[in-house]
Length: 326
Length: 292
Image (cartoon, one colour):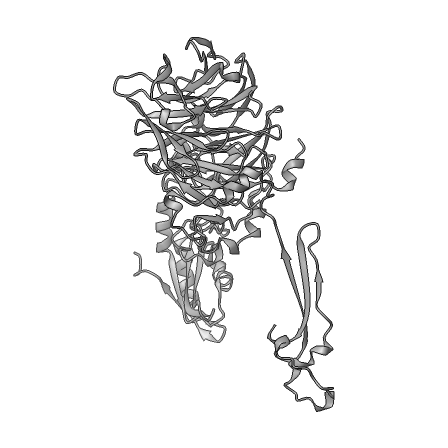
């Protein structure tokens, strides 16, 4: 395939998200400006100006009208996707790390980093349909996990929130009461910081990636470990294919290998695994730096990866991809 | 094709009356252009015939492959979004901006292979030209100096600076260990401390350079193999070098031979100085001021 290279960001990428219909791709980077691209040819549509810090995460509403972004400048902002206008800004006492719209886009879960003595929190905010009625109160605030919470997503029917972070423990919280429902344990769970979470298309299972060089597939209701995928590199980003039984894992490079490996340019790869057989299908090379973000197009026919090198690489699969036999 | 434009309605041409250099008007002698439409791989072939400068009939086959990068199955809402105005930093952008480009390299989903099979070699050989001048696609690796991107091994300008694996002397086979021995659980081991690393390697090379013999008054087409053949009679040779003019490809008339043993070098100097080789009298002496 001929990937399309998009160099709109001057700093490393942090997150990528497709809209529901798969025609827009939102990219967040450390350079303060989330950008939206057309997902078929990579043409840039616009940028959202307003943040003063690295943008860690974003999510787009189902109708592709609202974008929510979480940034290190201690704000989470709501944007009009079409015009780039900022609709509302939630203020926090510490950098915001992860954001996710609920099903129905009426609520959003936001995680904040531990900062200056404050613990990390998971907060739920109500999102009003009319931006002028938007208020900043939290419906729910959860504290408890030690260390940074790198990612939080809504569970099925918005009943639960799943979070994972630096303490390597995946937790399921009740979204109404804030009570901790389930936790991953030490033997089956990750051993190091969980960097990313990705839900399946139907929301019944999800994938977690960790710096312990593995990614694990879990049932979203019971938090039972289903599969484990082992790589040689710390995992920074994971994604599940909505079309085939594939998962893709992207990562960095172990610090001890930096001086001894032949640093041929373009060697960082996104590894494809068979979701059920746990076997490696192959790798797609090309990034000049560790891969920090991965996303599949909802139609499963293309995927994009964002790297430390500031590039977003958009790949449309060749016909052979759909015929891969294991 | 300009030739087509030049044709006015012609009266009946008699080939005997045509000038020699009017070959271009003889298009009617050429078979017609054939267009083989895009087949299932999107390959289109156009076969044209024309006359080249010498007046010969040439067949020109142009093969193009049209690839669709994406299937445009957009919903109605998505089509509306396609016509949104650009905003933010993209507002003043024209379509010529180079933020988005298609990779010149073909990237494949590389299937994992059993260890020991060559996966990379094939890919590198296939696209050497695309690597030139392209910032990221560095595929030219020089084995001599390890530098990447601007030259192949045979053209290495740093040939004499880099450690070479010479075929002339038998270096102990353990020199090329990659990850042997002291990898205590994957800890980093610097190359000089690895098993088989030649600690005295640099000393050896320095001594070797004191066994360096300069040969002058070489003929134009003398090359390294010639010198090697001439000097190996005196003992094992670690290195030969002939200075070659890059532009003309001819020897610049001098070269160097490094012996492993100094005594061999001395004997070579005594025997070959003044020796007639390829119509010229060789001058053979120590390269550095006489090492004593």
